[in-house]
Image (cartoon, rainbow over all chains, first blue to last red; front, side, top):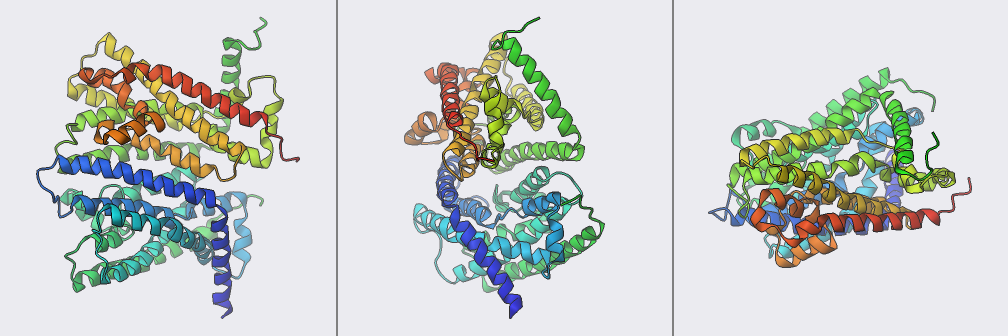
Length: 268
Length: 269
C-alpha cells in the first residue's frame, strides 16, 4: 500500500506543477491551432495535386487527423525525460535519488505523468474535438476509441522507455541538447509523426516496422484512422505494442543498471 | 590608438574578444559540441527526407516541384542561420532574469542588447549554413537557374533581409520574460515558425496568405525574397519591401527588448 502511495503523491505533485504553468498551456493550444492550419493547407494542396482522393489508403482527412493528433500526442507525452536525467546527472543531484528507497526509473516516470495528465485534458482533448469537427466527423466514435485509449497508454510507456534509454546516454556524453534533438528527429520520422508511415516506400517501411518507434505514434493513430480494421487487427497492433513495452522496458532497465555502476559524479 | 566608444570598430573589437572566450569555453566540452552539431544536422536532413517522402507519392504540390521546394528549403536554412548563430542567447534570458544574473549586463558602459547577445555564438548554426548552401546549390543546378550577378546579389540581399524577421520575432518573444513568467513557451511557439517558412505561401487561401504576410510574417522568411531568383514572373512588391520591413521590424524588436531590460530591477541577490 505504501508503495502505491508514494507514487501517487508524486503524480499529485506533478499535476499541481502542471497546473501552475497555465500560460504555457494556452500558448501550446494556440501553437496546435497554427500547426493545424499549416497542415490543413499543406496537405490539402498535396491531395489536390493528386489524381486520386485516396493515396496509399489514406484520405486527406485521415492524414489530417493522423498528423495533428501526432503533434498533440507529442506534447502531452514529452515530459522532458532526457533533460531531467541529464540535468540530475550534471548537477550531481542524481546521487540523492539513488539513495532513496525508490526506483529511479519509476520516480522519473511518475514525476512526469502528472504533467501528461494535465496536458492531456487541456491540450490533447480540445485538439481532438477541434480536429473532429474540422474533418466533419471523420473519426468513427465507437469501440475503436476504447482500443485507441488502450493503445495510447501503451504509447506513453514505450515512449517513456525510449526516452529513459536516451536519457541514460547522457551519463556518457556531456551533451543533453544534442542527444535529445537526435532522439526527437529519429522518433518523429520513424514513428510516422512527421509523414504518415503509409506514405513510406516499401523498403523503408519494412525497416521501420521492425523498430519500436512505430509503436509510439503509428499504432494508436492507425487504430483511429483505419476503418477497415478487424478484431484480429486490433489484437495484432496492441499485441505488438505490449511486446515493445516488454522489450524497451527490459533494455532501458539493463542499460541503466550497467551505466549507474560506471557513473562518476563530480561534487553535487 | 584610441577607439571611439560607440563606433562600429569598437563594437567589432569587443565582439571578437567575447567570441573567442565563448569558443574557448565551448571547446572544453568537446563531446557536447560535436554531438550538438550532429544533432543540428539531423534536423536539417530530416526536413530533406520529409520532402523526399512526400514527393515519392505526389509529383508536385499545387504547381511546386520537388526541386523548387528544395530551393525554398535551402533558402530558409540560410535565412535562419543568423538568428541561430548570433542571437541564441535569447534562450538563456529566462534563467538570467530569474536568477538575477542579468543585472551584470546593466552595469557595463556598452550597449546592453549588444553585450548580452555577443556572449553566445552558436556554432551549430554553421552546420545548418553549410547544409543550406548544399541544398540550395543542388536545387539551383537542377532547376537550371543562371548563375548571374543579379541572382547572386539577389540571394545575398534576400537571405540577409529574410533573416531579420526571425531575429525580430525571437527578440520580441524573449523580451516577454521581462514582464511575464512562462514566456519560454511563447519562444518555442515562435521558433516553430521557422519550420513553416519553407512552404510556398501560395498553398494558403487568401485570408491566411494575408495573415502569414502581415500578422505572422512567415512569408517574408523565405517565400517573397526567394521569388526574386526562383520565379521572376511572380515577383511582388513585397519582394522588394522585404529589406525595408525587416530593418523596421528588427529595430522595433530592439526597442521592445531594451524597454524590458531598462525596467529590470534585479532579484535583490
